[in-house]
Length: 290
Image (cartoon, rainbow, N blue to C red; front, top):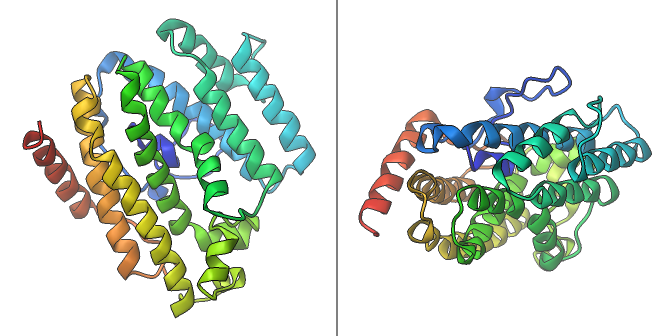
């Protein structure tokens, strides 16, 4: 899997400390589209991201210790250090970066996002949310672009896709994040403008006012996806180009599903049949948009 890293969509990881499972995944797109030689490096980046994210989300670590552990992780990304409990995956990504020539800057930006998660539980406005997503999501797409030696001009379109995917994940998990982590990514100004309250996220069903909040964000997501439509034709690597086209279709489909289903009443995701449809549509989209 590739773009699933953005949202940590395939939570299968070889660490007993990370308890997310494959059943939690949202965007299972075939990794066979990506060159075999690169999959190991992508997996190393993914394992690092999952581990660091779990530090920020852990209910068994106090905030001060979380920040200390994330600092150790960041340090390991700067230079090779002895492998320990808090930097094993970072060291492995550091070694990978030396092999590929891709900077660890992208991984360090993720650490900044996870640090924000420890320090910050509310976002005032759309600009604050976008800034968070530039650290929590965009670095993954940028890493993949650099790994495939694609043109720098592609990144702004990949950024749009990554941010759209991140916000879709925020909507999927809005109730869980609020109840379990007291974390709300939906900007406070949007709640206020739509007459909704943050506390509405704890309800069994989505109120009309909260639905207006969700739809406003989905409108923003759709604008980002529209921007990202240009990405596939700019990506020189065939596998990544095809996977990007498929992910765009998946994002569009999930956005539509979130409009008509209730994320408070159920976890909204695509089923296997819908994924297959998206893969076919994505491949056709790329075929007829060369």
